[in-house]
Length: 475
Image 1 (cartoon, rainbow, N blue to C red):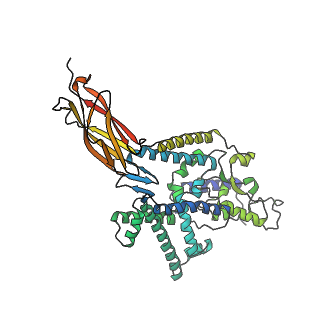
Image 2 (image 1 turned 90 degrees about the vertical axis):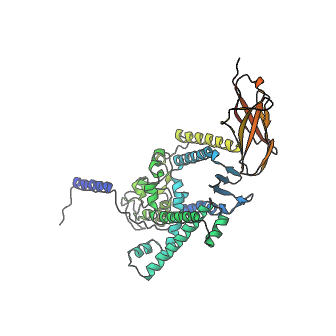
Image 3 (image 1 turned 120 degrees about the vertical axis):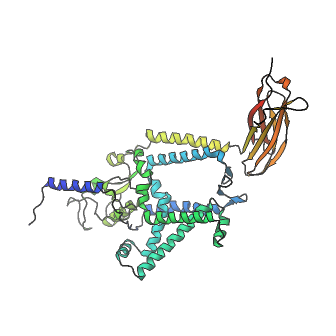
């Protein structure tokens, strides 16, 4: 007859096992086979994916004003986004857009937790698409586990082969669409079909297809758990009023199996029947009953699974639910709190400034470079003349005609084209000269201003200052 170990011995054994688990940093990944159960959050995720996937796959095929609506033309260094064309000179706008996106993510995280990961992150979306294909080809969770353990035969080869073919097809379409944002897709697809695509386009298409195949097909939750930095620093943005997926410990414990007709409260059991469905549906394989964990992506699938069981048992739903720590302990949540208000204020200011700059962005750039090989020269009429190189960059989405003149504190004489026509996206370079009577100059170095203005839209104009250099004055 075995003798039961004393409590302190059991505690020492548990602590020892815990230490071993923590120190086992190179543990082999255990494949996660998720169970598919219907529910509100699964349907909600589907309706968040449909618009995003539709936009991703369809936007490259939309044309505006004779060109692709979204086209990042790297060789020409032009980035077309609907009716606006951005140039490398607009890099600060891109930086601001990224900063605003980060603050929007922080603001959402403070309020509603890591829902971006569970409902909108491309890694999650494509992983779920790949898992749906896996479920279609290999069957439900139990069938897939059985297939993993079975020896290789015709049936297993057929199912795995079909899955990999569909995975590869989806990865290729995803990659081809991505490359289509940089190389016009209406040209890229026919070139691929006729095997005449540029080697660079072929390389990047197959490279991104391979990465999609590996990430969504095999890495899956490892990207969320080990590679994504957001999983690591999200905890610093959480507070007691952040909405997270939580397990009601007081209601659920002690957990245990029971019959439906059994009065579990009379027997000292909580509502949790310890069915482990919440673990089986989790994409990252965690047990939400162990409390908040950084691996949780707030997808809500464990809520669907638990509510399904609660409904079958005749219990109230909400044993696992989206709630806050304050609500769990005190029954209320503070939405308007200093941290959240601070993020909202900062985000509002940045969005306002960004929108103002976009609306008032001048689609014209003028650069004037003085010829430094010759400080100045004297004309036959005795005037002092400076030579410049004028560059006019039409950053608009249509052609413009511009007028050119100079102004300043003196009566400058401008020599060069007075009007020029510049096509969309064209950079026109031309030499011009400015002359001045040296008798009027009070200093040998004075300012001169070049003004370039659109003839069809005077609101489009640019002013560029430079220096006019004359002879040293002897008094």
